[in-house]
Every structure is written in C-alpha cells, then in structure tokens.
Length: 65
Image (tube, rainbow, N blue to C red; front, side, top):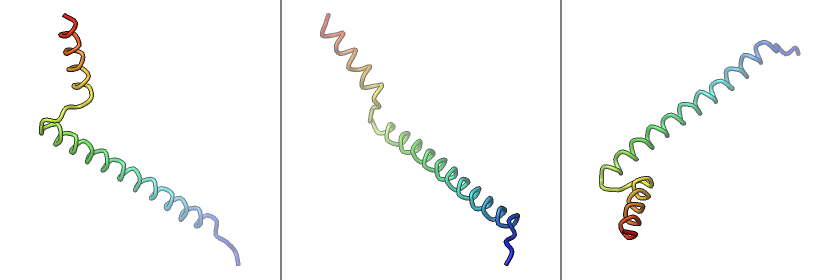
C-alpha cells in the first residue's frame, strides 16, 4: 500500500492553516468584545487606572500645599 505524500501534505497543510485561521478569528473577536465592554463600562462612571492615578496625584499636591 503506497502513501501519496503529496496528498497527505495537502491535507495536513489545510488542517494546520485552518487551525491558525480559527485562532486568529477568535483572537480578533475576543479583542473586539473587550473593547466594547471597556467602552460600555467607562460610560457608566467607572474610571480606569490612569485616571485614578492622576486624581491621586492631584490630591497629594493639594495636601502638600
């Protein structure tokens, strides 16, 4: 029984490429959902870390004066 290595390579290559394509699609979807959640949560009065640190610095400056 002979193995057609060219055909086996095509099947393996297609499967390998398909796995990477699915992983890339999932990564993009998760990234977009993360952006949407971040925008939705900041619109509800929550602050991010950079805003908190800048506010803390302003309060420390006021205490020092």
